[in-house]
Length: 173
Ligand code: NI
Image (cartoon, rainbow, N blue to C red):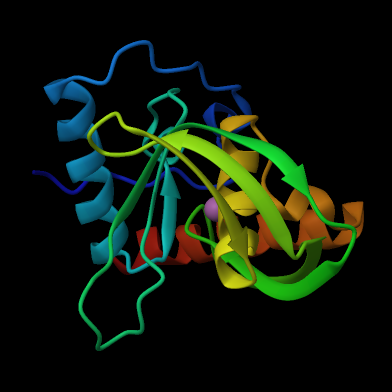
């Protein structure tokens, strides 16, 4: 396993549309292992493959409480089959937009279909935090970031903040 570099805005790779995984192999599982290690190291609760520069429709997530036993989940080729009208407002963040948080509204429940770590098909409803997180991550697969749901002004402010922090980190080295 290896910790990969997480791409940050405004890297154009993050705007790419990822392609479906055709067969789940040991190579796919090695990628998911790296993604989980990278996510835990960050630390974060969700990561899409494109965030480490791999344009495949793969997501990893762990919504367990900080000190609880880890509950890693992997999603290959996830699709939303259904959702509800009720919305949930949540202050989101993203490892590709470090230290920036804003509220985004998304459906409170979504019905998902995906392949798990072993390539087994799962159909289930996700709700609340799980629903918010999977919709955020699935946006990444289509080149959409949570800041794309905000006003242009807030989006530009977010990108400038990330760029400024990165410049300062470089100066410190
Ligand atoms: Ni994100």
